[in-house]
Amino acid sequence: MNQVFTVTGMTCGHCEKAVARAIQDADPQAQVKIDRSQNKVEVESAQARETLVNAIVEEGYAVAA
Image (cartoon, rainbow, N blue to C red):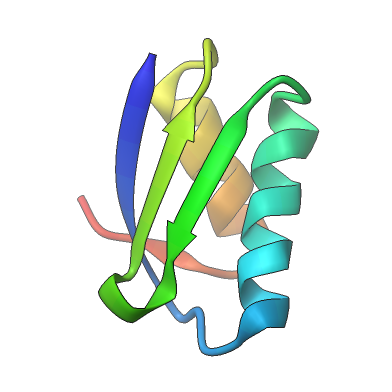
């Protein structure tokens, strides 16, 4: 399932990698595309949205509703 998140707080490449790693820790099969300039994170994953949001938030980033 393709899901799009608005994630704030990403300011550099390290932030992008941290968000991608958090998502892939929750779902190792997830495909992640990040557009930091738009604060968009697109994820192809079978995991529930809530699971992915929790992974991003636990990494220290905010996810807009």
